[in-house]
Length: 124
Image (cartoon, rainbow, N blue to C red; front, side, top):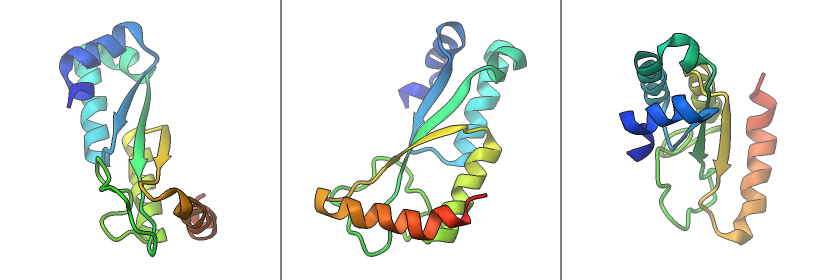
């Protein structure tokens, strides 16, 4: 993917404040962090914010389009699997994420309610 090419990572190191991926898992974040360190040194790489869009389709809420990346919590997410994925992403170095819900507009409220009731209380 373009945001993970060496050229893109060099531009992030030279001109940016961070790197923004899309639909990545913990292993990919670790790989990007390691490549940034290889390309720019630890100090330059560690000053960058690592962020990504994450895609979540809560149980019981049908997706209107397939997520364009790895789904948060897996193909059949549970609150525990979502929290586990978020923890692994944080351990890998991801500091910020944008939540994308590929659901119909009339289902967004239900999807957000699930996240608030089931996932948020499990976050430390």
